Image (spheres, rainbow, N blue to C red):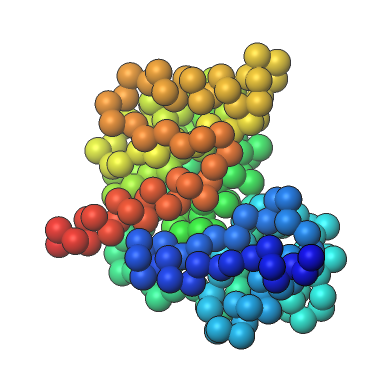
Length: 223
């Protein structure tokens, strides 16, 4: 069976819901990814690829590698130009530790694809609370703050007590022992005493960025 028969891209999704189809690359063959790239190039359609591993990227044909803006940390790639910029709507993406950066960068790169200004702030976990307190003014200026944390995942609760911004928590699979691959962080966020905290699935930086985009568009609609 050819790769083309496995693929049916949804180029109309952006018009329907304001979010393009993203290509989740985990589990896809290099042939399938190449076929997707060929179809998108033929239609001159921009695309965001998530969970694209370095080995997958290196195995692509040279013409495909050259067409992509690939970031190995976030495992994202962008085909074509990002969407036009959005004036004044800045999202802060905050991480508890540098080990959480692959997930936070996935969120930041997704927002970049949609033209949303992003401020990335890393390594401000509650074990050194003073580092977070130094950035409170940055948080207050942002309509949306994405907080990425593993281990005990206390950071979103603390941030929620410091700023009126929309808070989107992303638990990560970072941690020892009973962290159990992010399940402890997920349960901690779900049990948070911060009112109105939105919580994504484990390691889902892409989903957090899409939630932020929906919030920003709702704000735009009221403006």
